[in-house]
Image (cartoon, one colour):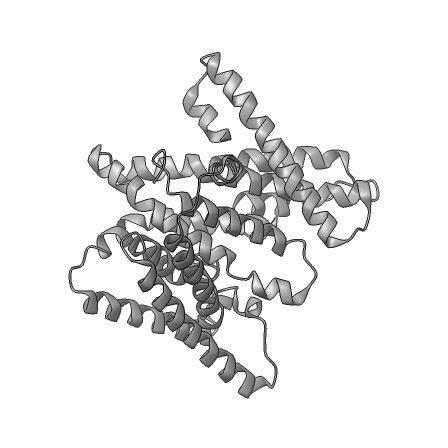
Length: 335
């Protein structure tokens, strides 16, 4: 621990962030498969960090509504502000003389549904935030066997629902319930990982690897094709989840074991990961308009550099405004 920060978590957040951005740009199938652990890793980290945040809420005797409002200010309001900026900027980039987005697309983007596809991850973090009290108190059950039995039963029912294609028949299940179970369990594992050793994390990684290999074999024996885990991501099933947790806990184990040093760039990107992620959506959209088709590696480098740079400039502007003693609560939204 240094300056009240968990150093290895900063590194893991940056890895997750860079991999998610990579997923939106890379065209190499092998690389896309390797990095397909990023969202569960970020949810795992969110669960790890949520414990202290929720404990502070309890210690200060705040209501759950205040906790929810705090998470909304941290996640949803910055996203909405970014979307306003994004859709305003895109006025200057018409397609065949027309504005590129219709009303339904814009509304769905603000609802985190079927608009801009990249904001779906914000919906996942909001879902996790809203179930935090349930997950936190569930983690307090003293009998581990009862915990695991309940989780196993819930997950089996979830997989049955996916198998029966309930997600295609019910919009609430498709966009909300189909993500509460898998990501809620990953979120809980993140909370638990605060107290586990690197050896325990390694063992969890091995178990997940075994589950992934079994799932891959069953799918291959049925289809004759070794499918990428991406095909099982929306909504997530055991094939996707087992691979993602195998890599995530392997990284967690390695990073817990080694004494990593604090790095100012890593810490900045970790603290500003939300805004770096949001800004990458804009640059991902407008860079091709200015530069045309380019090698994906160059595109990736440009998007990452531009996103980090504009976030750095944004933070410096916020520093100036804070010194001018403007509304600090409002300014925190931009950090």
